[in-house]
Amino acid sequence: MIAASICTGSEAHEDPARRYVAGLAAGVFYIVIAVFGATLAQLMAALPKELIMTLSGLALIGSITTGLVGMVSHAEHRDASIITFLVAASGMSLLGLGAAFWSLVLGGVAYLILHQRWGVRYDAPDPGIVLPIETETDNARPDPIVCN
Image 1: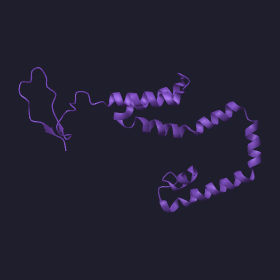
Image 2 (image 1 turned 60 degrees about the vertical axis):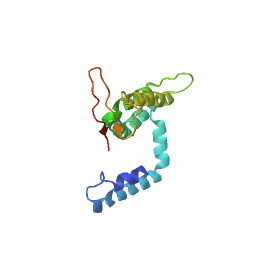
Image 3 (image 1 turned 45 degrees about the vertical axis):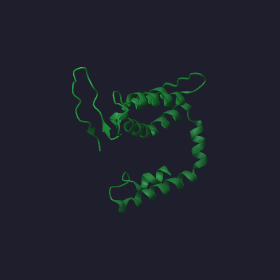
Image 4 (image 1 turned 120 degrees about the vertical axis):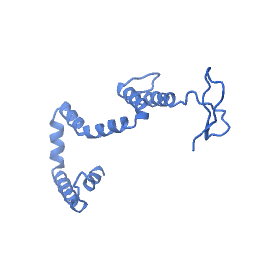
């Protein structure tokens, strides 16, 4: 359960010996919810849908923030991640396929294009050796660079 991982994590307390308090508090909360479950369900059913949706969105802010931070934390994958996220968030539909499919396709294509090794010769004799690209001004070939 998510609550159990939160209660045993560093968010509960810095000192691992004191984290049991969060577990006890969660247990008491679960018991109260179980006792008043039917009443709570009726209360939620009586509230406007917009309010319930707002509360749900507020509850997910931490998860969304963690996902967005993880998405942009690696600079080499940032552009493809942003493209994937934006296509998924757009809600687009093409050829009867939804945004989730197209976000994976377009994000994958963006990743492949952005990580293509442009200008690297693939006919090198050894995969550990990268030969420099020749330019018009190069008359003599330098020694190969060994990448180990």
